[in-house]
Image (tube, rainbow, N blue to C red; front, side, top):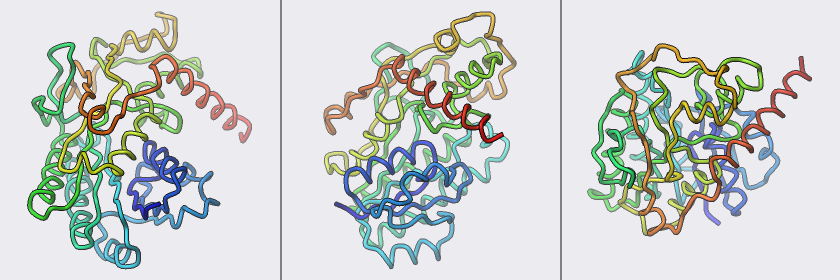
Length: 321
């Protein structure tokens, strides 16, 4: 039963992390500027007495952070708040750098002053392409192919420096491509959610480039379990830890798995080919060893669960109209 600060808790993954933390009996404060998240994602938790406060605010607001940390003795800060869109980071690198790197620094300073453990959400997009079937371990070469990846790498190093310089308990986590219910189905959403939405809407599934690029797709509840456990355990303090399904699939094969009709699949010009990672396959052996974590939901089951949720969401949207 801990006091938890969760940044980005109104976002897609953040919403599931909030659910897990609340289900575990923790007291949770959520800070989100709603640039990516939606307060509606938290509707089912608003009557939960363990959700102490939702703060609509910015991690770059130092006075707000000082007030939050002075009012509550937090045990853990799960830092998920970030600019997350690769294309946006290419078009506007300043916003991504300020949110993901400078914002993280401001938060780290408060956690240092109040000795609060930090779980920093990074991304698999910091890695160079996978070269073999054993998958990408934490020792794999990194490659900042986009300002988003560059900002995350900078923030990772800042976070880890607080472990080495101050003895602050921190862990950097790198989940692979996460999908599932509550993910956006439009331009900022993930490939699974967008493909399923287009299928249900009778639209074509558009693939950037040749579609031979592969992704390791992690179901969101498995991801949330991993994120939460990284905060509970001191075995990962000072570490970088991956989480993935351990299976990759080409975007072409993913589209066919979802829609089942090759005629509904179209290839379009890639909008950011320079930041594409051709093969992403995660190796989560370290997470299993240190946290006892393994994914529980197969890709096929995760797609089924996600489609059920999106279908219900589409029906409710039509009912409102």
